[in-house]
Image 1 (cartoon, rainbow, N blue to C red):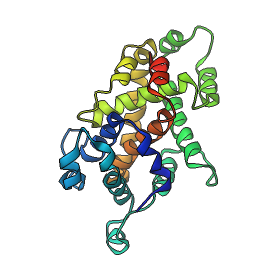
Image 2 (cartoon, one colour; image 1 turned 90 degrees about the vertical axis):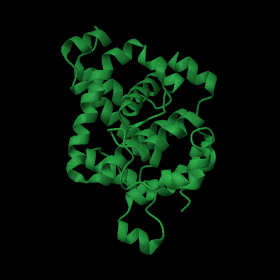
Image 3 (tube, rainbow, N blue to C red; image 1 turned 30 degrees about the horizontal axis):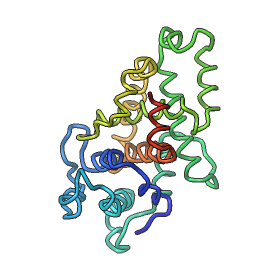
Length: 240
């Protein structure tokens, strides 16, 4: 089923598409998910990991099917739209959003929610490393006010996805994300982000196996949408 909210995937780099595919196929132990079907499809076998554009329709279908009820998927012949998946994930995590908001805005709120959770996990020393001026509450307020196009927002979102790639992805050694790992902000945020993600996984382990796919995929897609708006040169300057 074509999904208008995922058409932007065609503008994403091959590396980012590999990242999304790996998150769909592999679990946090590095094993193929028992319920995934993507890796068995000929288009995936013939094109992974070097020609991912042609795999996009199959990746979208896989994500939509994870988001739908198995029996209903059989009757419909497809899963549910990404927008519905995003709203399910956002509600479960506790993201405050208006159902009339755009998909991109809900994704922004989702990433900001994880930023704020990460700051909550910080020690006072962590906060001082980031800023000698702001308190923890002031940092959270600053994060909430960040625009998605700002370099800091992109860097923080990159830290989240880098932590996700360590947990789920097999071949996503993304060059520009590697730059983040060497940055001062990564050194401070990496631990708190990991703790925030662990707290989210704990909730979704209880919620059911489908969410173990939907949560990392939704976060990854939210990041991909933001960076797809930048040229390679612009992104290198931001992350440089």
